[in-house]
Amino acid sequence: MSFKPAYKRILLKISGECFCRNREGGISMSEVGAVSEQIRKVAESGVQLAIVCGGGNILRGKQFSAVSAAIQPATAHYMGMLATIINGLALHDALENIGVPTRLQTAIRMESVAEPFIRRRCIRHLEKNRVVILSGGTGSPFVTTDTAAALRSREIEADALLKATRVDGIYSEDPEKNPHAVRYSEISYQDVLTKRLGVMDLQAVHHCMEGKIPIVVFNYLREGNVERAVAGERIGTLVHGQAQSV
Image (cartoon, rainbow, N blue to C red; front, side, top):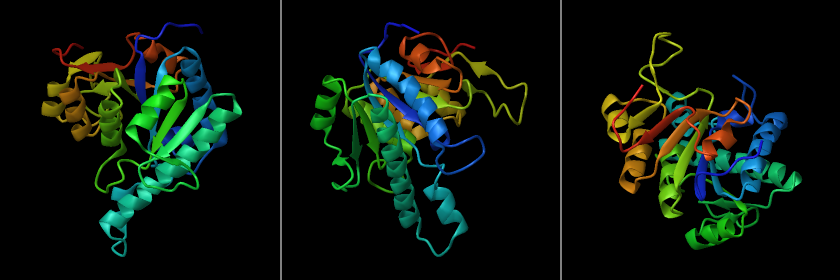
């Protein structure tokens, strides 16, 4: 599929679910390989691409601290940040294996496996058409990877934040619980915040609203959807500053 990017620089947020089979945990390299192929096509289009990955396939800090009184909440969040670095390492090698120049940067310093996140260095990599994986969240506990993605989008001056999920956009309610839930084709930042729609951390939405960075929420499992989102096609849900439409 050949396409013309609608954006010069984007941040792609992929969840930990992208690294494993449906309803399973751990890392499935077949799943990572499938995501990598979609990323390769985007990188070859000439768009500057940064990626933030979640770590829920390995461990979610907030949930882990809730079930284990022996682990302090801050410690659990640090464990979750390390899980995103494990995913980042897997994605880095999968991309380089198919010929995509890639750099892995971490918010938690560990120079033996990755570069530290330095804003200017990250932007320079992007300008040289290298894919940059930004892992380790923000380096601080109690912050989701959604919010990390929004903050990094602002730091690198991304034109859009694309959130790849297993659902095809933002709904008025959980579509698995209410089959009559309405999917929005577009909605304003303020409406997402007011309605407290849960597809993305609300703090992340607020940061994008302040930075005037549009958010596209889409189903990455549909063949070609990552490229379609990058091309600006109307898939999933667009979150921006205008009034909502269904």
